[in-house]
Length: 344
Image (cartoon, rainbow, N blue to C red; front, side):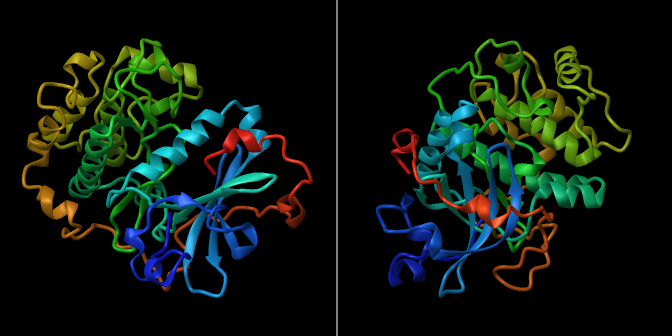
């Protein structure tokens, strides 16, 4: 989630897209350099704030993670991996990491501020998306997954809550906490229950095909307004995923149904996206007929939803959250975890 610009040098401020991810501490950045405006989102061991770099009109999203909670929940490897992966990638539909640093209490990731809010909020407001709207967002996600997979990165957390809209309405994928660089397979159970591929649930070892499964779930949810497999508890969801029974609403386009079925194929050796031609099989599917993939990559295709934005620091498109008391932001005197986050 991010703004244009980066508080380093005048040259960087003029061309924010050229800024490499860096270690903020080495550049001399600290928490007091930023004005905290409001919370944009919360998680298990941290939250994301809208911040302004003081004495400027540059706005950013500051991801603040509490070290003690990260350690308690055994997420140190995930957090360090998230930082390393975000530092490596640079793609139009993925949030940019600008710098990281830490203090005695927290680790911080300074990200571009994506002003349009979560796709989840726009989907809930609309109820469901039309066939054309869904195809637009799905196509930008296909390009993003294709890019990540070329770098041997699996994302593993595709869902509407992690998809942001920029000021023109284009997708920005956020939250790489579950992303992992994998040559072949990994066995970690992680992700959102409704979006988990069967091989994750069955602990068979999983790789890139899980992202194509999640794309199938996402396309269904955008078109229907709800995911294909849901229940009141995770185990009920897992049972339905493994049973694999798909019930399509009557209004679904016939080509959309065919694509979803091919993506939600339990046998990953037969799953679209994981066949001999890889992502090309998805891009050339009938449902995507007419998509200008190059134009899309250059953001030359008009988005179906253009968020209402008054200024660079406008936060109207994000939900309101209770703010932390100021004393909770104070730094402790000792930091037993500093060595666990050497890259920050």
